[in-house]
Image (cartoon, rainbow over all chains, first blue to last red; front, side, top):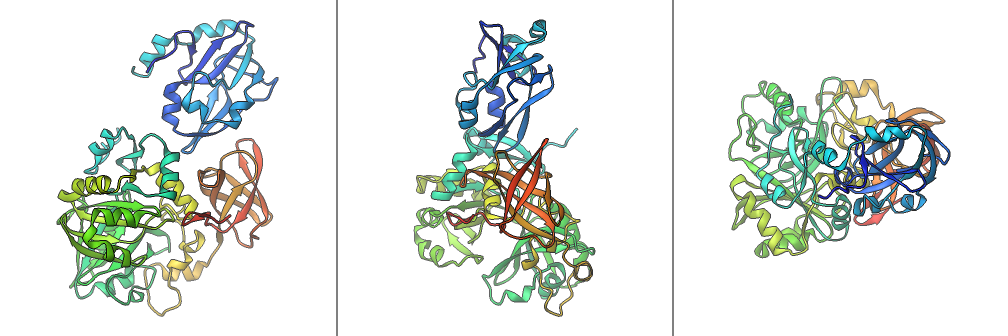
Length: 126
Length: 374
């Protein structure tokens, strides 16, 4: 399974993309969606919500179970993907195109604590 | 370290089909073969094949078998008036709690019980303890790992509106016998795969059959069904769970356990309190009476009902015992134990994380035979 090289990864299976405007888009990895199974519901944070690194800030639910999404960096939620709430199954079909929310980081250096694609691949045994 | 999960004889069949495997009550079982949702929906419109060999068949023989089952089971074994009939019931402990739920069939030379996977060892201990009071009784489990097993068998379920078509395709010579087998009836049939036990029952709310065959014929039965009925699809325990919640069927260990009275989890209909017979747990049930209602919930707001979520009603608080996203209804549904006096159709609140969401109370049956009931 290919793991995109341009993303940062949390050990809790979120991916994090640095946008040109300085914000970070957050989603879940191929490995995470595969483990969850058919995704049927997401609960997004609120616009303007302050999030803290490694704290739960969203929920993804498959037919099987609910799982927390942890903020990969601290900051403020500056965008949420309402379209994804309407079609959560696209997280299964295109996990790396399915961003949940964007964070304007309060401590941009936190991104350096995340894993690169190679480290994430080895953390999931690939 | 957890003990190694047990394997059914179909384990490599599942893995060859790329199933995602999970530990289910100590058994390494397929949760799905790619998509739980499509397996669920396929079962509602066509037919699916489930490996249920983690469940255990137990045969009881002997001249005292009726007296034994009269004590062991909460429903009245005398209701099975002729061979071939079966019913669903519970075995209870002295406090009236459920040791297990099961189906029992009366057959020409025996009574056949089908019990749950994770409870099978304890069930047998309980049964043998009671059997010690009888002289003319023989208990023979058919799951290979169980003590005293003879002639092991494995179980497959074919479920869905086209289950009969699938069976008829696999056993053309027996098509009429399959068709004429009534719901909750079972019989042995002679086939090219040997003597198979066919029962018209299931855990999905659709028409269906549970088939038990000698273990050495299990793989042949699987491939016979899959090749003779082309649109039969294997389905995993994930779909089995969402199908049974839609059907409103209880799951042992989730909607009930050894502390739960059948009266409080919607199983009063499986208990015979009318006749003079004296089964284990009867006194406790009569003394305690019913203290909870078992009802269905349909979530009106956005979210997913899950077990252990708290339910707030005007009559007091209750708890969800099973909850899921319903693939057929495309809403979230749940089963809950609630204080007495609830009004069907009224709105209650469910606590999901930090929110209170609205749900409507319904009868605990959401989908039957392809029809949405709520």
